[in-house]
Structure formats: structure tokens, C-alpha cells
Amino acid sequence: MSFKPARTLTFKCKKCTKPVTVFLQKVSACSHIQPYQGICACGEVHRHATGQKEAVAAYLASDGEWTHHHHH
View (cartoon, rainbow, N blue to C red):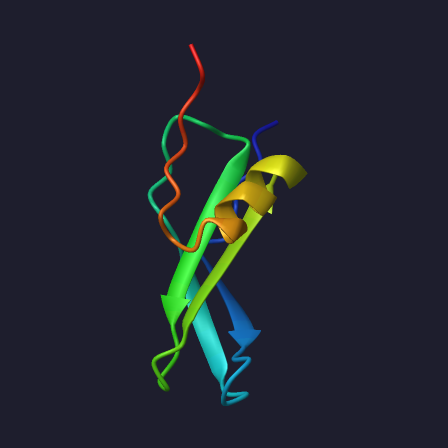
């Protein structure tokens, strides 16, 4: 059974409290994280991710510089 992540999610902006839609980003072959990103009307960038807790934490902590790579 394959789980399909939602293509978009909506959050309330931390700055202006308007709803902001984040879109599922193109993911690498890694199925354990689905990164989302969107920009609010006020210009605030929103990031969200679902998946493995460690991977999600690393993604959110990276502030957009995140690329997933496996250690060889």
C-alpha cells in the first residue's frame, strides 16, 4: 500500500496570520521525507516536512540549504 503525500498544505503565517499554502517539493529518491515550501503574501517563507522525525528536523533546521544525501 503506497502512501501519497498531499500536494499542498495550508498553514497560518507566523508573521501576518494569513493562511499560506505550501507545496510539495520535488523529492529525491528518498521516500522517508516529503519537504514542502511556500511563500506567504507578506513574503514570509514557510517550510514544512512530513516523514522521518530526524530527517524532518534536519530539513527544518537547515533553513533551505538542505539537500538530502546518503553517507557512503
